[in-house]
Length: 222
Image (tube, rainbow, N blue to C red; front, side):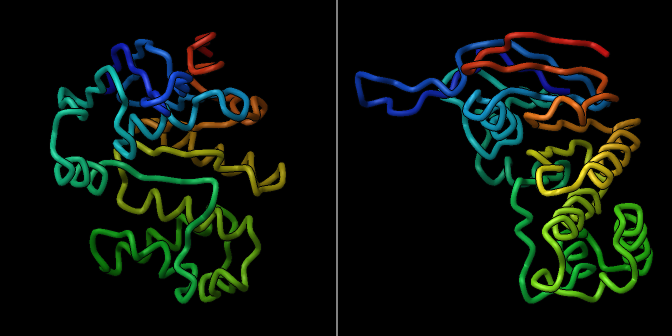
């Protein structure tokens, strides 16, 4: 699904001291499975995710997705791919403050049919949000509940790829592992990329890619 060749991300290009977030490496990712991208803060793992998902354009190298070169197509074409085929979970939930939990999931849905609403409720229930929480706005939910609503929002359109940047950072251990079980189940026929510094949540990952100082330092197959 993804084929990355000689990818680099360089900041401060106009200075003598260039900062490399990514330092020129190759990477191939499959059509499905749970892939963990692990490394300390500042290692480049989130930058890699942003380059794969078209949220950032690498300074050098190519990123191909299903045969499409993402670094050469137009911004509108990249936006179309993101909207139709990608789902995103960020460290911050970015929920709409004046919408309740259910509507925050449905706002990303391709349609507002009863079937879609049913699926949204099922996602939220699977993530531990009951009927009482569905009608609450973000200010009335805990940080963990908001994050779980954001995860449901990322999955509502059944995207082919889910990009999750520290998806369990605001959750306790029980809910963190529940979220990872759901992402693992989703990865049976989709690709799920989880960026994290916490190796313990990647026990069921199909592959772990370790990044250090902008380079892949280790690749593991579980």
